[in-house]
Length: 131
Image 1 (cartoon, rainbow, N blue to C red):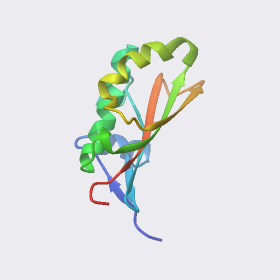
Image 2 (image 1 turned 180 degrees about the horizontal axis):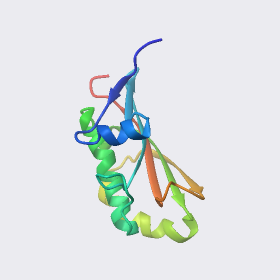
Image 3 (image 1 turned 90 degrees about the vertical axis):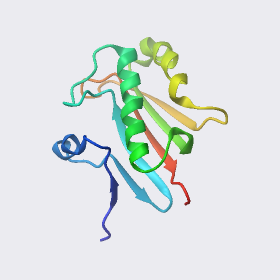
Image 4 (image 1 turned 120 degrees about the horizontal axis):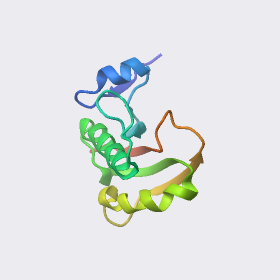
């Protein structure tokens, strides 16, 4: 079995170890980033929805930065939203702040019933620089 090439953002390794998953794994020129939520440093949810979405993107950007990537390197996005009928428009007011310029990455939005106390989660696949 090969060893996974794991990427940890600064200051969050204990949180990932406690929850027993890797924030991102490099493989074959790609970076596979685990779902990022709007969690505070202690792992608790940011209660206000727009602030939670911003924090999820900040957490995502910290993982991307740790791999020398940015959101511009993202090619695939999956978003999970609790009760999307109620929250989608509010969330999409925040997304353009982080989304970058055209051409945009592709996206799949999934409505879910539970996200461990969170309302929004984003996971991505990015192309590694010089891959």
